[in-house]
Length: 136
Image (cartoon, rainbow, N blue to C red; front, side, top):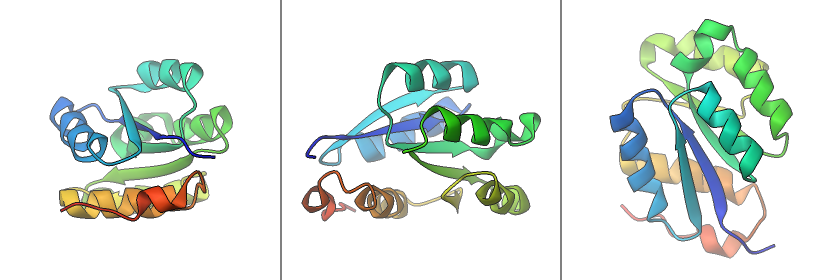
């Protein structure tokens, strides 16, 4: 299958949404969507085929990881990557047992963000040759 990788960025911080969006949307074959909360994220998940989700852990914590499970249920084929600060490390690691596929610590360089997302995108097997380039 040769199509764009649809990425959902779920983060309550508009600056972080914008930063991640701009860092990823300009990559070949990446199409990005943003949501500030669960309600917006679920609307997007019900409207589009999402392949990869970048989820800020602070949205998950109040619901005790129910959101991680819900996202995994809504789109079981999607790769879920949680992110947060070094102070949230325990919660980031706990999210793996709840259904997340990986995590990263913020702040993160744009190069590292692209590299992580590209690495996971290759696992989707939609069009592997499209994901070799990661610009710095």
